[in-house]
Each structure stands twice: as C-alpha cells, then as structure tokens.
Amino acid sequence: MHVYPFSAVVGSDDLALALTLCAVSPAIGGVLVRGEKGTAKSTMVRAQAALLPQVTVVTGCRFGCDPQAPDPACVDGPHPAGAAAHTRPARLVELPVGATEDRVTGSLHLGKALAEGTAEYEPGLLALAHRGVLYVDEVNLLHDHLVDLLLDAAAMGRSTVERDGVSVTHAARFVLVGTMNPEEGELRPQLLDRFGLTVEVAAPRDPAQRAEIVRRRLAFDADPDGFVAKWSDAEAALSRRIADARLRLPRVLLPDAALVAIAEVCAAFDVDGMRADLVTAKAAVAHAAWCGRDEVTREDIAVAAKLALPHRRRRNPFDSPGMDDRLLDDLLADEDGGPDDPDDDPSGGCEGSDAAAPDSPGRPAETTVTAPAEPYRARLLAADRTGRGAAGRRSRARTTIGRTVGEHNGDSGPIHLPATIRATAARPCAFVAAGTATKAHGWELRRKVIEGKEANLVLLCVDASGSMAAKARMTQVKTAILSLLLDAYRRRDTVGLVTFRGDGAHLLLPPTNSVDVAATRLRELPAGGRTPLAEGLHEAAETIRRHRLRDPDRRALLVVVTDGRATAGPDAVNRSLAAAELIAAQGISSVVLDSETGRFRMGLARHLAERLGAEYVAVGDVQADAITTAIRGRAA
Image (cartoon, rainbow, N blue to C red; front, side):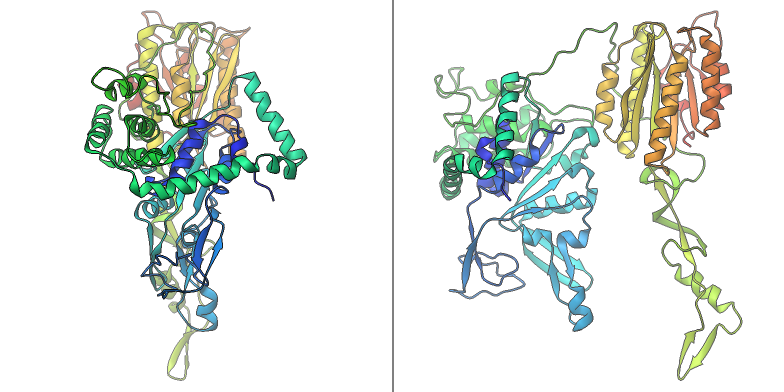
C-alpha cells in the first residue's frame, strides 16, 4: 500500500515544519494538529512518518532497543555488546479512540498465564511506538486519563506498568502526534498544554491552490506507483535532511542571550508555568539543526514561539489560540530595532520554515451584533430525577462509575458480592457440605446499583428578533448563555443552539461537544426582524427528537430565551402555544426566560411556559444573574 508523498502535499507549511521539528527532536513533546475535516491532517502524519530514518534494533527485543545504547532496564535484556541486530523502518503506531489502558501500556500475557501459569508482560502500543511515531486520530475523543498517560510517557521517555501483578518499566521515546476537529469537542486546557507544539490547519481559499491539490490527488489515485516514483527524489532528500539534523542536534549551541530572549517572550505572552520556556528552547534548537546552523538565532526562537505558545495563552476555554505577531517581532528585535539581518526572510534563511496564515473568508454584514461580557461561574444545572445517560459531571444517574446505592437481581451490572452471599444464605439448604469444604448450592446473584453523574444535552433556543436587539438586553442575555456554556464545558455536556428571527428558525449549531464553537456562534449572533416563535419551538423539538434517536439515554434541557412576542405569520400566537404543547407532550423539560419589558406587557411568555409545563421567570430587563439563578434543577 502506497503512502502519499510528504513533499507532494500542497500548503500546510506550518504543519509540515512542526512535524519535522518533532522528528528531529522527539523531546519537544509532539504535535497537536487542530483543523476542520478534509484538511489532510492524517495524510501528512502518515506521509511524514515514512521519511523517518530507519532504526537499528536488537534482534528479538520486543521493545526495539538500540544495540549501541540498549535500555539497561529492558524486560528482554540485558543486551550484551555485539548482540545480533537488524535494521527496520521506524514504526507508525496508530492508537484507536476505543483503546483500553491495558492495550496502550501493556499487561499480563493472558495466554501464558493460563497455559503455563507464568506472569509475563505483554507489551502495549507504547512499546511498539518506541523510536517511531505514535499517532492518535481524534485525540479529543480519547478518554482524558489515556491522553494524560500518553503525554506523561512522551515527556518522560518511559512507560511504567503496575497492574495485574506486573511491575515493568521500559523505554518509550516516540513522536506523539494527535489530530482533532475542534467542532467535535475540545481538549481540556491542562492537556492542551502538555502537547509541545500546536498547529491550526484550514483548507486554502485560493482556487488555484485548491485545484492543484485535487490535481495531485487524482494523479495519485490513478497511478500510485508512478506518482510515488515522481516524488521519490524529493522524499529521499527530505529523509536525508532529517537524519543530518538529528546528528547535528547535540552540537547546536543555545547561548545565554537566546535563553534570556526565550524567557522574555514567554513572560510577555503571559503563559502559565515553565513548560512553554522548555518547549520553545527545544524547538528553537531543533529548528537551528534543521536549517544547518550550529547556534540558535532569534529567527529560530521566533519560529519556535509561533508553534509552542499560541495554545498556552488560553486563559479560559473560550479563548481562541493565537498570538500577536507584532509583539513577538518587537520582543525579538535587535538593538537597532530590526531583525538580526534585515535581508533575511521570516524563516531565518531556512526554506519551508514559515508559512502565511490562510485567508479567512469575510462574514457579510448583519443587522445588529452585540458582544457578550466576560462569562462568570453559573449555578449547577442538574436533573431533578435520576437518569441513565452517558457518564459526566452534571445530573444524578445510574452509571457504571460511582457509589453503590443498592442491588437488583437483573442480568446487567457488576456483581454485588455481599448481597449475593446474603441472598444465597437466606435460602433453605443454601449450602451443602463437600468433604471439608462448603460450597453454594446454586447462587442467588445480586448486582450493584451504582449512582454517579451523567452529562446532558443543553439546547438553547434564543429569540434574536428586533425586540431583543436593545444593546443592554442582548449583552446580558448573551453573557448569561455564555456562562452556561462555560459550565457545560466543565461538565462535559453536549450543547446546541437554535435561533429564530425574521421569517424562520435556524439550527445554528447542531448538538456537539464543542462548546467553543457554540460560544463563537453566540458572539456572532445578530438581532433584528420579526419573531417566528412557533418556528423556533418546532426546530428545537425536531433537534431534540433527532438527537434522541442517536443518543436515547441523554436527557435534554430546553432553554427558551424570548419576550414572547410571536409576530411572524398568521395566527402566530396560537401556533406558538400549540408548538409548546407538542414539546410538553414529548416529556422535554424546559425553562422560559421572559425578557419582555415595559409598563404594558402582553404576558405571552407566561402562557408559553404554562403550555410547555416549564418554569416561568419574569426577568424584566434581563439580568444575567437572574437568568442563571432561574436555570437549576430542570434537566430532564
């Protein structure tokens, strides 16, 4: 099976550079690639792994020890000097999202334990990836504890296993690469910081560049052999350059002046901790080696900072990764106010080191767009009953993780041993003698009822009509909703956003785990036009219905933010009330936040809440605190 050539990829220069720097120096800590679907993230990772120099390993060693410097603690060792060795390509090990911890770290070899009665360690994916690449696609969907485990191994260069009667430590030095689509959910900031470098990728907007991408891909699909052969010289040159940079890396000098410059940059960008300084220094040294230099320059620091710092500047989950390039240039300017050499290009004379940011498509002007204020901590939004949804941090639920609150005699769930013994012992002739032993005459199995926390679907149905367009009112409404989104992020909820204005309603954001995207859509939400309230309610009900088909155990909370002025279409008020009754019949729990103001009020929101079976809150000039206080204990 042919791999698409790395040198044939069009664009994505920043990603190509980040992957290359980590190939030169795995100690950087890996690369996190963030981008929309269809941007060649996986293609580039697999293509770059094929360029890695071949590795020489001790024959028969399951951990790929280097015969020139074998691991003293290797489970298959010790390896004597002159041990038989062979050369093989560096491995690309892919870790599936559904992998278990024992598959990642290794565990007891079950076959030998049962057949021979021996406790032998069976290596996991970390051992297989040693001296190669460990690739995790959709890393944001991987369980947090597994991501933490991977990052610890990547940072320490070793993996320690203490499980199933096995106590093993082995070398695990690899290039860790994770790819993710932010629309499917974000990594926690604590985990985001553990990746050495981060790159944002997007599809190019230039038609000529897009056409060239398609042209090359079609050529590869039509004749893989011919296409690979066409790019073989370029691939071989890149592979040799990576090997040369690895050999040069230990000789690259990081002078005190460069180290001070790195510290100044990290301090100026207000990053937390010292990991940013360390990663920037390692990346700068790798970049100097890649460019054939024996000493780190300020251009190396600038390139490294652009890859190592943007994702570490996030102060809260809704801050977009990025940095001020002008500030970086000012910090790294020499005493004459310019770069080291005014004639140098931004890459420091190293071709392919820097890339221009992709053009962003303009957003057409909207009616009125009001920005929210800074979000605050919202009260817990929790169900008033016990559900059975996906594990999370919000509402009470029957789960597989939590505390035991009871027992049952069904077929599912872990066995409740004390309850099983009690139930069995309570039966007549429950136990019979068998020589000197006593055995159960048929067990009465009881299983645990475990209560923990679940995640919910929080669907926001927001009135964006002209009556909501007053700046102060819309700012407070957006701030409250943004605060609820922040709370949903912390509790691992799924969120969605329906808006209605003008002639209809729109599902602005389908249910997703990415509250970042929801926050962005909320900030850009315009206001103006008529109020199609009925259409908004129908769209919300249909969204919840479709989501229930995909995830029937996840309970939904509908938050309707409106002043109740249904003004779009004939008989708008009655149609809105009928839509509310339809939602109530589906058993959807909801809250109506009435933003109607003024001395003379129509009171339509109160009637709407009655038809919904929802809690009604008359908030007047919508206060953010009042909104958040009202939304509690209502998920269902």
